[in-house]
Image 1 (tube, protein in one colour):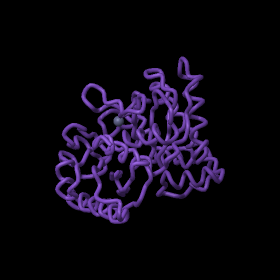
Image 2 (cartoon, helix red, strand yellow):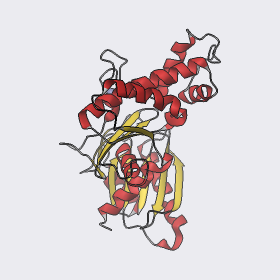
Image 3 (cartoon, helix red, strand yellow):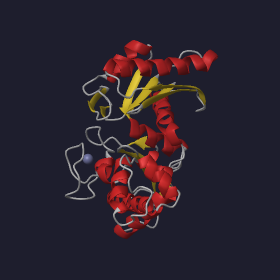
Image 4 (cartoon, protein in one colour):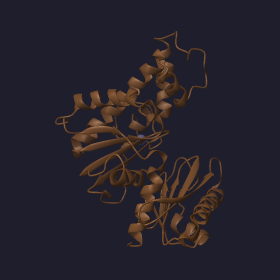
Length: 308
Ligand SMILES: [Zn+2]
């Protein structure tokens, strides 16, 4: 089977055998492309993975994770902030290009599935996944299966409200986790912290990114460390609401901002513990599968689709 993880900047395809081993990978860049361009690059990444797998034979199914709100039944993308795919029936469009049965799902749902079956949430009864990067993706995995909800859109954990009157979010709400605990939020928090820590290396820098703040925090820069603490606390407050609602045994945190490691996770744990009713049992841990989580989860979903 083929697992595909489509992100706002790049696409990763993997040809995966029955034992879950990745036989070959294909990678392409999709940033700035139009709809047809994105689909063409996805198809090219898939071909690269299939050809790399060599004698394994043609794949039985393909599952692709898309960064947006996806109707898992029809394969239609309902909302997609980072790529021009809104309204597209990805399933039909991609089947024409790759001649393999296609299943479409939300990217974070698939990363959650990967972590629950083969990563940091192995053996869990109820796992939450938060991918903290440019935005915040989420998934709820119950006994190793994606929780869908009444209309198929469960798991949008990044739009949990943390601050009633906080900054505007792309979803139309305000003060969501996505605007308070993401890569861009880290940069905003760091620039704010420079006023208190004028000796920071960030003083005088104008194009600050989450990656730059992460690098400086690891080097001990005071403003960057303060920002990591602020973002960690916001993340913990969001996690607390989710823990109170769902009582998971594990919360897995992945995504680019996790380059901060414990500098992010420790304040998140403290804040979550202070705001939950029965949090002693909940583990808040780093993801284990890294950038392959979504691709591996997609391959698992594809295997289910062909019943093999
Ligand atoms: Zn939102």
